[in-house]
Length: 140
Image (cartoon, rainbow, N blue to C red):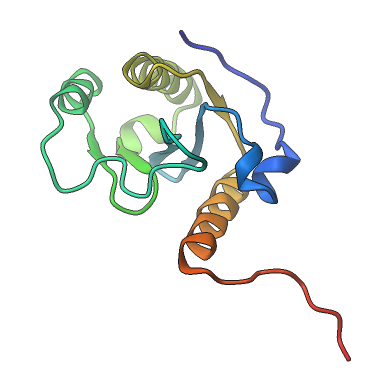
């Protein structure tokens, strides 16, 4: 099951972490494809999608893509180097292959989002996990 969608930010991702649909969200950062992986139960995304343990399925995806996959900082990082990132046609083809493999692995569709939105989601999750109130206060 794979889908691609527009690069349009949904407002619920920025504010209410409980209103999300279950889908992989991805964005490019220089030579790294960054992917948020939704939780199977509960709300939000996995805090450590790869962790410190061996994951045979993700290792097979790594081999098929010829890249390293890391995942300790709230999202998967697929580090492909400049051989892919600087050429639009290679980047588009690589993104399609990578996201199709991840979508099949996790059983959810995927959608591209702007890089800033990906970092906003990561920050909101961190704040929620740490109990930080991020509401704007009116000056006295």
